[in-house]
Amino acid sequence: MKLSRRGFCGALPLALAGIAGLAPAAPKERVIKIEARRFAYTPDVITLKRGEAVLLEITAIDFAHGFSVPDLKQRADLVPGRPVRLRLQPESAGRFTFLCDNFCGGGHEEMNGTLVVLA
Image (cartoon, rainbow, N blue to C red; front, side):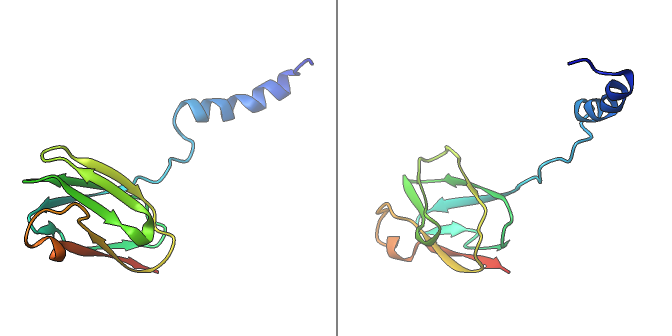
């Protein structure tokens, strides 16, 4: 197949736009830092928008905790001092409980929080 000059010149601006980074950029995800320590998460209420891409960066401060959001099928083991990153993009509005699922002592049952996803 032979390209005419006209066909080649018409494609050149499109190719250069892609190379120059003029193509639409993917939306940047919001980073939310969470600390886990006996017997609380900080923050314990996180508000998101439905469809918003977020990166949860969770760090255990004092103990090997767990992080679980059962309704959103998210779970991670937290090793003290090592941030764990979970990508999340909730598609449904509502209130979703997150909790520690690794027994961490006498206040373990109260170690939870809420993800609030707005429509």
